[in-house]
Image (tube, rainbow, N blue to C red; front, side, top):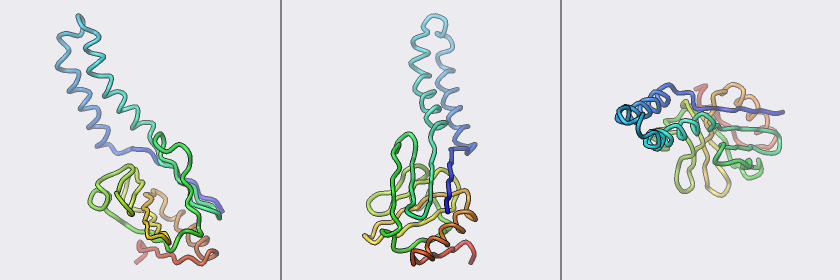
Length: 164
């Protein structure tokens, strides 16, 4: 039993915003572009670097019989490992990333965190120590199948609120 999902920022609104900022940073310096190329570079380089970061950023989720592992490249390069024995219960649910966690990416403070890239469906892990973790997914059917099977074997309560 094995599940792997790799998600990238594909939302059009993010890319429109980034290209808009790039355009707005280029327009004011077009008159000086020929005489001051360094000024052009200084103005557009930060925007291009941010665009490259969004292009490379991804969330990788791997689920197997031992653990749930996540990487949020380039910020978390070594997988974070969550052992099944540390999990109290799991729920596959619809949620509001902007309202509940303040947006997409690595979000949350204290004991309730989220790792999400897009969409509004996630796997909510409730740990025995009281902490919670929401993992966004674009593959709810596949993740439902494997998590349900592993939870039955591990005797961990699992609830799919998407089917209600």
